[in-house]
Image (tube, rainbow, N blue to C red; front, side, top):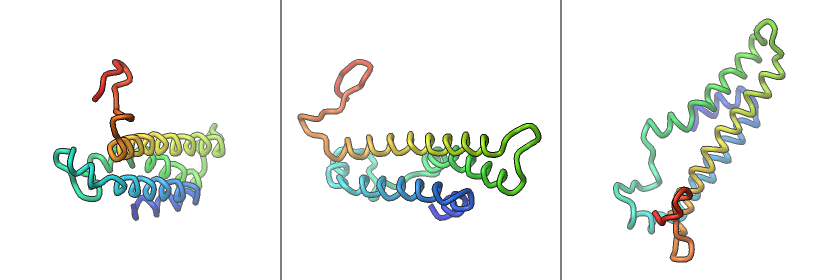
Length: 130
């Protein structure tokens, strides 16, 4: 979180707050049903520890957008491009990326934590329980 926070802060505070919101809410959801998850998950890790591939996958696109925005702030837009338009597109990409990450994390963490007979998980393509 720390190195990505420094980069997102250099691109703008809204990036930092978005990342912090993702981190805090996802951490709380991970801890919410840890006792139940420990019983049903093979290879359960306390605190929902992630490996480097998961961290890289969740951070790559957002980090790239922050680098690009920081570059635009420092050096301006390439000839023929409007810096504000590029920043808008990169900001939308950043928020879209972390929106997908947070949706995936919230769904998997809360679904595992609160599932009961009335809220069984199912595959949307076949409607079969999973």
